[in-house]
Image (tube, rainbow, N blue to C red; front, side, top):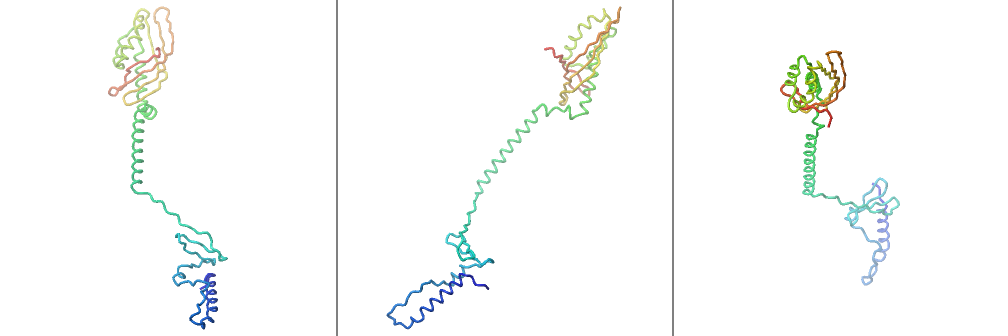
Length: 255
């Protein structure tokens, strides 16, 4: 086992003290013996003082509970202190966790309610392709039927109105075709409406709103037959009754 510099120095001091005190042992008892210049280390101090390292240095325990390192030249290095570990009380941690969970639960409920109330989230016109196609097809047929009229068979238009119109649309349809009905027998009018394009703006369960583009031709079949053409754009609100979609309101954007 290698001997550290500290042990070597201590042994040298002990040898010096022994050499100086040996001749004085023959002095008389009245003459006081000189005190040793170096303090001897006790076995307990030796056991706790030294810990040899691979680099030839050592570390010593300090009074504050830290450790000091001795460099290779025998000089003590700066003490290394142990930092106290922070302690978090269990009740405080539980309280913080409870507050966070409560805040998250409140946010979740609010977000879910917002999504349910948002009309955009309820609109399935772009996601439910099958129902979107169904309502488009039936309302296209309904518009062509109720907005077409011939003087020779006015009851055909009446049957179409009974089949496809409900609610406010019934009176709206009568007001819109009132002039045509009045002039049809005299001028032998034939009104034909053809839907050229339609788009479903809203589809929410059994309710829908559609934008309609249509071409209309008005033909006078009496003397000097004449046909006029016009384009129409309007919106309809539709409701589903059983397996049939019906027109509940007509919006001509004239307000």
